Amino acid sequence: MRNYYMGRLIGQVMPSSDAALLSRSQRAFQERPDLMLNVLNIRPGMIVADVGAGTGYTSLQIAKRVGPTGIVFSTDVQKSMLQLLTINAIYYGMHNIRPVLSTADNPNLPHNSFDLILMVDTYHECSNPPATLRGLRKALKPNGRIVVVEYRAEDANIPLLLDHKMSIYQTRLEFETNGFIFIGNVEILPLQHIMIFQKQQVRKQVREPVSEPVREQLREPVSEPVRAQLREPVREQLREQLREQEREQV
Ligand SMILES: C[S@@+](CC[C@H](N)C(=O)[O-])C[C@H]1O[C@@H](n2cnc3c(N)ncnc32)[C@H](O)[C@@H]1O
Image (cartoon, rainbow, N blue to C red; front, side, top):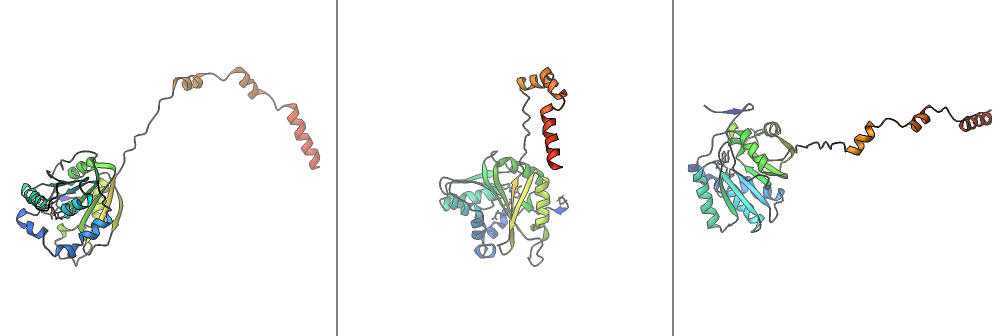
């Protein structure tokens, strides 16, 4: 039985037997990952997670951009994909890639650690979206971004099954329901949306307790001299000023 989430049919996980599709040579000009990564302004030293990294097609490019002072955590739910990713990382000499075995219920990423979490053609396959999003929310730094790249469901000319695409409406619905705010979408890629979210900050209201001296003042009855002032009729001097003003106006 196939699962639905918020009215959307969840896509089937791409088996590692199809892994060659991920590294096809035409992909660079079909999807333009270079443009996508430029928009994300990935800088040396950043800590990035590539969630659902597959064979590491995107992880390898991120690893180059974050450089030796940065780290890419590359996750996948399939051990066989992570094995291919590890071979690729070694082959291309990328020592800053850390493979992470996730489950559908837990991304298994360290908390509060990531400047950027990227999901390229992956979110539509996550079989337990609320659990995945809960884990990713915890993993993101307070000002970190989570970026979802998916084939446009709104475009019927893209020859893919609907469950392998995502619309902006549906992605927003699912992310906003799970504690993220929508920052915006960038439409510069030939086939995919770039959708950017941040986590909603839970602002704890700091209710400072009223300090004892202030509490004391609040309890203190209005002092007798102040009370007397409050009762005092308008002073004679003030009355005279008013009379003078009236005389001038006549
Ligand atoms: C279509 S492939 C895309 C791979 C890679 N992002 C790329 O663009 O080359 C989707 C990958 O996401 C993985 N995946 C599916 N559900 C996942 C989940 N809940 N957490 C992490 N990875 C997942 C699959 O095993 C598969 O390798």
